[in-house]
Image (cartoon, rainbow over all chains, first blue to last red):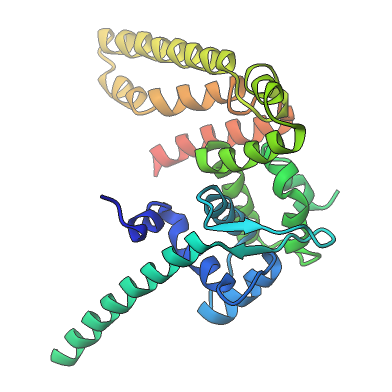
Length: 108
Length: 165
């Protein structure tokens, strides 16, 4: 059976940008430009517009984020309950991996 | 027309209707660097090929234009609005098969004339060339011919270049 973590992994090369978007939306709705700025601040990576909207479309297709009414030309997105579960599960997985990595570095 | 707007025309119409304005607003007035331009072109190819992306943009179009008979109409007879009809799919499949058979004939002719290296070279092109040349008949149907030319021509050039690398 596929876990939610596997589902995020199934986004292929968009899985990392998608994770950043979910993290960016975790503290409230944001539009594309605000997401790009936030992701750059948090991760140091600037997502290109093609990558950003490729990931947004995939997250929207899976109903992990949903669009809000447009403000001028900008449309904010918000994290859905399903998206929040996927994000929590992914972050738990990353924490476990980080714990193992740190432990192995300490042993070396 | 700004470079960004020109590049936006490479995306499917349904995608532009759904994300075009916010996409342009996200880029803003910043000058477009080569890395961002490559990212936008990659995004356009992805928008054409990804079932997920097409599902999102077409769902939005159907929701906006109404459900029921409009949805059926969009599936069967409105390819120019970004949908791929069953007929378009069949035409694309026939084009792919035709090009595959053409390559098969060329490979056989090359093999029969002791041109084994040419035959081997051609074999690597059969599926990617057949798929790429079929795209204007279904995936890209109804899009501006310049966008089709850039994507199909660019992909073919890239295929040849990759074989030489």
